[in-house]
Length: 93
Image (cartoon, rainbow, N blue to C red; front, side, top):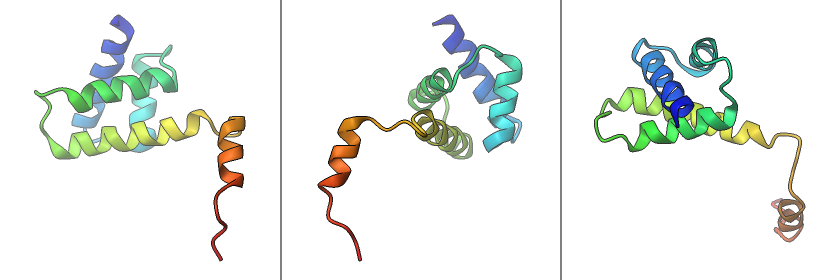
């Protein structure tokens, strides 16, 4: 929990300084070198549910970073169930 809180604080601090996307990610990694994408996504979710954090721009930046890194986590590795589900989907013309 201690690591997640540090990552959370780094996310919020970086977003408050106006950092976005890769610059925010680099800022968090510089302050928390052991932070993984998974920890960053989890800390982002903490920020999104924090009732004290009400600045829409900061929340949007953190949300965008969480989505990007959540999607990047599985890049190149697709679960067999996901592949099977895609085979059953109708193809768009």
